[in-house]
Length: 295
Image (cartoon, rainbow, N blue to C red):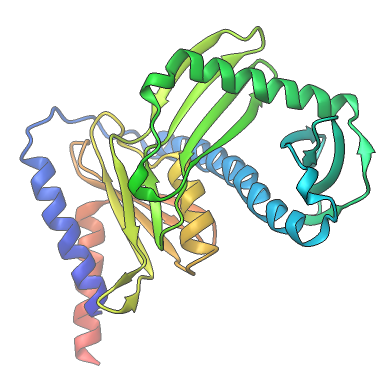
């Protein structure tokens, strides 16, 4: 239980610091409202993770299985019913490689058969280009790449609904950390009107994967009152880096924005998201420690 105790004591110190700021507290939503908020965040985060996951694995497969990889000039994504297609094309709009995800069977496969870009692929290519350009033209001065991360911004253009497109900017890294923060999104409607801009975190938060020579199994960070909940980008990066690469199992987000501090617990193995009162969680850890000592 030593690791758990160190973890909870660290959270306690952060909670005490945030409580000392004197920020006005929010009313805790009802259990039904918390469940609805949780489901919405989890759904958005899993969709973003799917796009990021496909970008990673399709790029790896491209390098292994596409004989004309040096001719690739760009990539795009389009969705057809339950299928998600990540395709790579040349300057002449010839598609040389496609990586597909079948949501109905949870299966992935690739195809290195060249073909001329079909209308769906061309439309997705143009929409991605136009939305990224519009987002950067409107909010480019507020979107930064963190040099210390030793990576670049990953960009995902996702159609959230028939009339809403969301452009995500996620901080990438080549370092052995789990990156959180420096993440943004821009919402654009079907008429290419910019609707809103969101900065998910105020700073870049690289969480270490090893502490005192031991691999971290769970991680945490805290959120400020103006953004009290775990974010879709947190969900995405937890799965992409912490789980898939480093084998971690749990991500805790501490929020002292409410009248009673809450922990948001993302179980990356079972893909569940729970909200619990911090004091209840701390009491549970105390009882577990006492039981462990009795043994």
